[in-house]
Every structure is written in C-alpha cells, then in structure tokens.
Length: 314
Image 1: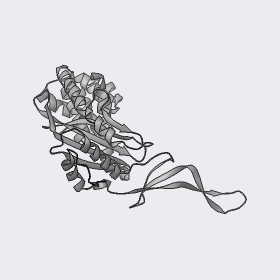
Image 2 (image 1 turned 45 degrees about the horizontal axis):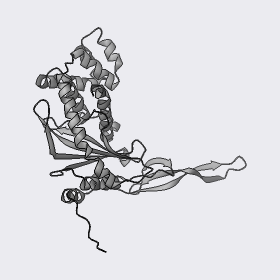
Image 3 (image 1 turned 60 degrees about the vertical axis):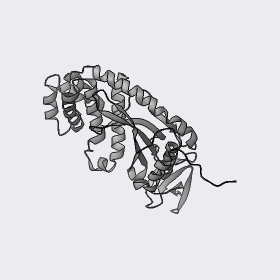
Image 4 (image 1 turned 120 degrees about the horizontal axis):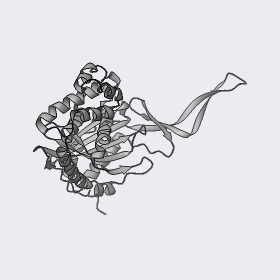
C-alpha cells in the first residue's frame, strides 16, 4: 500500500501557512478530574474528593485553567482547530492564491480566532471600492462558542472587516461533543461564495436607503446599549449629546464620528452607517486594560453587535 500523501489543489498555499506555525495558539492542553477539599464534622481531617462528572482543562505550558466541563465535552486545542481549518481550506474548491492567515487568542488561550483573507475572491462594492472574501474560524475551550467557520469580507480602502448580516453566515459549525469532519467542512465552506454574493446585494440596498442623523444616532445608541443618550437627544442635538458624554460614551462617540466621516464619501445612507459600525468593530481599541488584553474577544463581540444591529436590513 502506498504511503504517499494525497496532494490537494490548495496544498502549496496551506503548507506555507503551516510553515509559519501557530503564533499565540502554540500550546497543548490536558484534562484532569475536578476535585475539592472536604472536612467532616467528626474530625479536622481534610480529604480530597472528586466531582464525578466534571473535569478541568488547562494549558500544559503554564498550568493556566481554561475551562471546566462535563466528561462528554471534547476540548479542541487551538492548534488542532487551526490544523483542521487549514485542512478544510486545503481540500476545498476555493482559490487560495495569496491567502493570508492571522491568528489571535484571548482569555489566556481559552478562545481562538483565526482570520483567512482570500484576495483571489474580490468583488466591487457599491461605492466603487473592492472587498475580498474572508473566512473567520473561531473555537473556545471555555464553552463560549463551538468550532465555527463564518464568511466575511475585507474592504480594500478602509480595511474594515465587513461583517455579513444576510441570514446564516456560518458555513461550517461543529459542537465540542463531536469530532470534526474535514471533508464535510471542505464541501460546505464553498458556500461562502454564495453568502458573499447575497451580501453584495444587501450592500447595494443599504446604499439606496437614506438614514437621517437622528435615526443613525438612535441606532448607534441602541446597538451599544446606551439608551440614556437617546433620552438626552430629545432635548439636545445628537452631536451635543456625544460631545457631552465622550468620557463615558466612547463607543457611541467613535461610531458617530465615523458615520460623519463615511457619509462625506458614501452619502447619508445605511451603507455609510454600516461602514461606521464595521470601522469601530475592526479598528477601535478597548477602553480598559483587561479588555485590551482580550482585544480579539472584544472585537468578536463587537462583530456580533454589528450583525444584530443590521440584521433587519437583510
């Protein structure tokens, strides 16, 4: 029997990614039963007990705890997630010419985010710019989310990660109680091209929809959870409210300022507002030291805020 490894059409591109390693995701994990100390009423002796259904998952390089789960949970180490994603892309029919991979982790490595930019799949945006397909692979050990590959796009001029809003954008998803099916994933992620095509139609629709400044301000405040600023805007202009609350309303201020920047070039429409949101989710830093340490997770949460804020446009 031959031991020759099959060569897939994207082998060369994905092998170059493998040669670069795993970045901050380069560590192993291990699992041990969850234990606790128990003291009886009869004596002061302390005994160690084991939880029958719980285990702790930890990093083997620094012993940091990453999650506590039931025994049926199959933890996927970040390196394995990255290997699986690379193999899925390798076996797919996507054009991987000049593919770029960016690896980020947060929460001591418990959450992993990998972005793949595929410039060979590039299309024109409604404003005459271009955007290329991106695949976002995410996985967590702390149970925050399953292993998932979603479709998005990178716009050329502003390098915003354009969060897709048109229905189901996850092209592959697997629970941590099941093994990953690479071949099945390779067949599914080609759907990203159809998702991208549908999204471009939505972008054109958003460009044609006028959005007043008052409406934009309300949508920004609702999205980031600042309803009190909407109440203030009943008595003062949105710009006055933003200026008054820049210290405590940093997210609102960032998106509001970005909207004014984008509407000069794109017009006073929902496309400009959407770009203001994706500018914030892509480029704005966090506002606390703890959040900055987990900026990859912060930006993933912001992407979900953008998706929910614009879902009705779909």
